[in-house]
Image 1: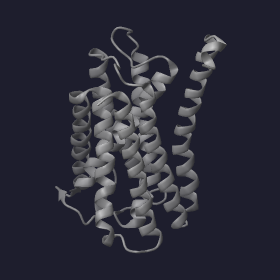
Image 2: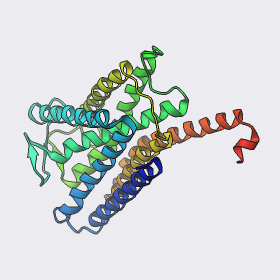
Image 3: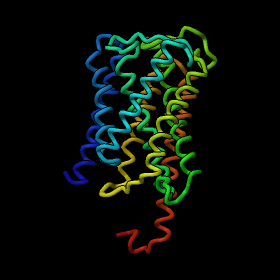
Image 4: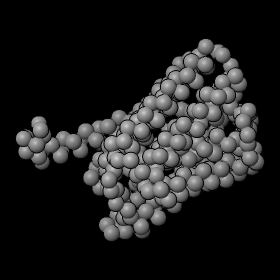
Length: 285
């Protein structure tokens, strides 16, 4: 399969994912019942994972890509078990009608892999748009490694800041204590940030010492995770409007769309700089 065919398949999967998200939103908006939409819920969990697996294996290589996703799922699952049974991130219980392991639904574990990879990829696109590339031992750019890990945490935590109140409203889980962020304890989000940076720090440090060039892959393929992030933000926005959670609509949209706007602005700046350095004949070819 050549590069163009792979890109076409990635965008096709993203388009299918978007349709499934829209179908789920219709089910919810028309009050058709969450329990009755189990096939949609399973598709909404499996399709994003397939997209992420395909993208990760292509951009990172098969073993690194699968290794990153496995690392994310295992560490995410471990901290979820810790959170459910100790209340370290706030006391909560899951109510999902799907298989669970040690009190943690399987989909939650899968979404740790999906969300963490999306955050990692968006940060990586920032690195490429800036012209820096990934930090490596060759360049001794430890500061860039620290910045990348921090941005991974911010990007992923923004997802939960928008998603968590909606999932509570949907009955996916409930909090047994009242918190200061729309009823959710702030240490839950501190936990998301901490777990994310643990995962990505481990992987980025590995990459730092064992860099791998992006060969045969267009950097524009990093727009796929960014578009997935936009689909997530849009879905959350619509749900929050359906549930008349206006404060969440504003806060969540500002947080997630700020990441998108900064990324696109950074890419636009890169294009302007590149075009400034190129002859006019090349720009208009």
